[in-house]
Amino acid sequence: MVEALEFVVSLTADGLAPTAELGFSENMAGFFTNNKIGMFPAGGFFTGFLLANGMEMGEFDVQYWPAWASQRHQLGVCGPWLLNDGPNIDQAWDFANFSKQREVMELLAFFSGTTRTTPIRRSMNNAERFANTGPANWHVFYGTADERPDTGPIPAPVFSVELSNIFTRYTSLAVSQERSAQEALDGMQAELEDLYARHA
Image (cartoon, rainbow, N blue to C red; front, side, top):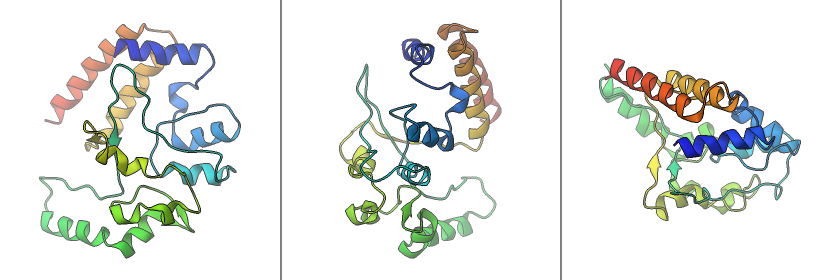
């Protein structure tokens, strides 16, 4: 992890990547259209941002993560969250079953013919779906599950906002060189352990 963060710090220090606090999807689409960056980790939803910011089909594509010490992937799709200890679990399952119907997925995931997320239904993740929006290499989204044995689901704990804030804060401290990569990760680890302990 230290080596990976040091690499991220070097990308920013060399002017090849924006700072961590600017790393939201809406911001990144603007960086793409202005030729400021050349890659960004994202799912099918990102095509909508790129098209809305002036890019055209054929000007962007998607690929598996590059290999380094490892090459682990994550798969995220448009689906509702269900909490194990929720007070209305039966109704929650009814809603989950309702929302995965093709007609409902069309409303949730796609607007004006533009892909806004990777559909939960595999049958909807096809060449026809991405014909007007791209990317040409669209099969990579579900390919992470089919072709990469170590792919895992994108974690979404109920405290994900707090988790993201901790991650961004300490990454920013390293990128701004206020702390070394090791110091930033040590601080991050301590806060994450406390966060998970409070929500155990």
